[in-house]
Image (cartoon, rainbow, N blue to C red; front, side):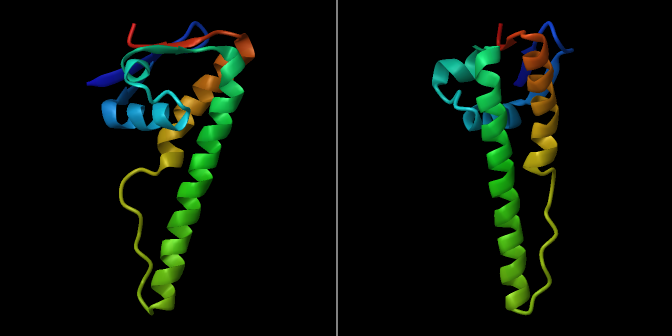
Length: 110
């Protein structure tokens, strides 16, 4: 399944289900009905952006902590695999900023 986020301010943003669910959970849209379809109003976008930025900072801090612990054990720091939360969330954050600027809501599952 894919998530298709739509707004009049931007083109469609398409994400794989796992990534879309992760983003929605971070911004507080983790109720079953909110995961399937929903709307994010401009007045809630600043809070959603802050939640995503906080989650990114926590993810990067945890990654640095793991690297530091590996170095203390005399091991090479593991190189992160895959795409980071920062990279996955960047298009969504950009979409939210554009929607906020133009005062348009963001919808999905409709």
